[in-house]
Length: 87
Image (cartoon, rainbow, N blue to C red; front, side, top):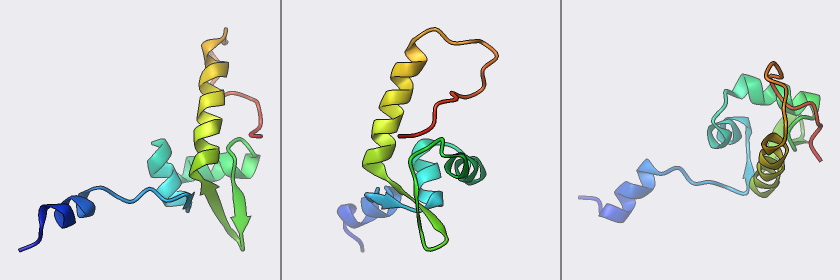
């Protein structure tokens, strides 16, 4: 029989510092297709390793903090996403 610690590790995915598109989309709560589009447009902080997108968790956290500060200001109701590029 497995220990409780081993079972809990199976239920909670490990959040790594560098994530692939699937891991990062799960972390952000959006679809991989949407994240791929955002990465290609430079909307989210990402980099390519070979031909695959990679995302640093700390950069995504900083980007989300910045986006939440920008969203706290006045926004247009018909604006679907912010138009600022990632830094």
